Image 1 (cartoon, rainbow, N blue to C red):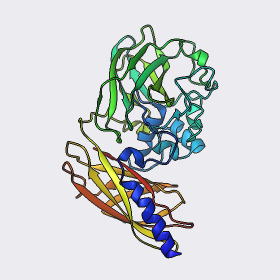
Image 2: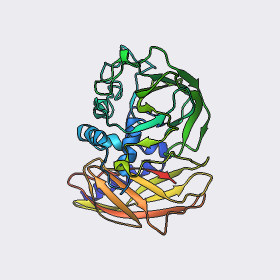
Image 3: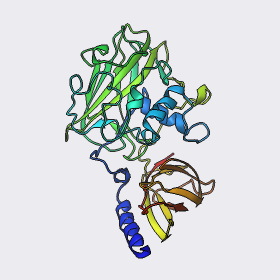
Image 4: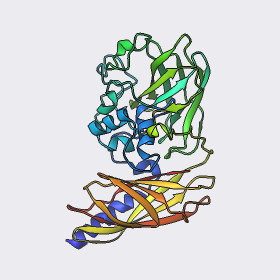
Length: 350
């Protein structure tokens, strides 16, 4: 039994030496991304869940309610609100009340459809020029369309398609980008003029339609037109809002798992984190998703928190700085009630 388990783990580990974008949980999707500015509900709730203390527990009440309904996996997969069969469709394809989750069938994002007025907010100025940013966890050609809610919309009722203006206020095909795919610090960007005559609470709805497949991404971003310039509130308990990422081009990292040893009820593994970009890293964060409910028993050369099947590992004080091409390794032991399966790690640099 031990030999078979070791063989299975080693075989699974071989699959984790591929590029970072392939290290995500197995799904029919091959592209990933989400609106970072103005932040989508999934992105800002993920930021809220990991800050300010590093605990995987949202402070924002709307985010907490979403996670209570959809689980913590919806935090780690903030870039995966998608329909593989979307083909750019919206009205008549996704039901009313399900626009923010896209009626997704790969992961459960239904909690992000909740009609609430306390979602994290991005503060904007009507009619101003604004730089939109959309994470490119995996890069693909395609078109972005951005819509705005009508003045009659209220955040306290489920979003219906009739709540959105019929036509996008801006669209762009294959915009420029910075950073390498596979981390939070890479994004597409484009400059657009925000709708004029808007005030108070609104929702910006972004559709990313790939041109090389039917896969389509859908994102809800809660905004308020009050003269702001992109400030975010409602994250980190109101005392530690996320800063707008300012990534350096070429920032990227990869993570590869291998089994060191295994036994009945557990195993020892290690993850090699490599700076695969073209600029130095000052720190890194790796996420592990366990397929069979494993729990981390001990971990070295890093610090970790775990919630359910997801564990977050941050660098130790002495191994966060990685020059281009440099690597570091952290190890751990895990308890497994069933047959052990190699976790799927992915990492982000800073």
